Amino acid sequence: MNNPVTADDVRFIKLGAKGELEKQCIADGTIRLGYEMVPYELGAEGKWEEVHKIFTANNGDRGAATRHVNQIRDFYQAPSTWIWITFSGDSMYWCFADAQVTRLDTGESIRKAIGGWHCDDINGKRLTKTRLSGALLAVQGFRGTICSTDAAYVINKINAKNPPY
Image (cartoon, rainbow, N blue to C red):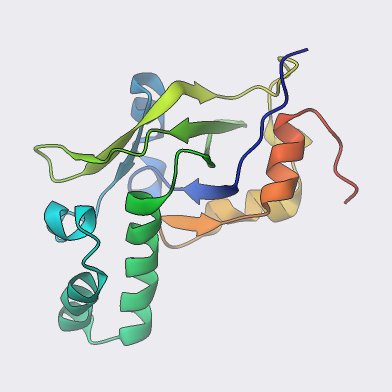
């Protein structure tokens, strides 16, 4: 048995529109964030009011702008002690991500997955959707890019412990 995994929090990330970048990110060990209209420097420097203004000017919806900013902030500021999850095929994949964010020529921001993406629990058993709760699987329908999820449940599943719910 491997050492138990600990994390301060867990975030779901949709990799590309409708998950179109899942396979690429899993293969190259990265997590990617679109939002190409947001200058990299604003996120890197934590200028969230300016990022908010970009979204408000774009559609006038302050609530939507706040949701976008919160997702971008999570991507740029999440410590390397957070677990990131995504779904590809019939499995949940998870990783820890390096804190450094870099920008690609495409305008996407990326973080390197520390040790790559994993789709098994610590005992080597695949984390298939049939082994996961409906509540966790529901995050796949999230209309945004990044959202929080039940951290205790995810960490227990990775550690091959059956959560009490």
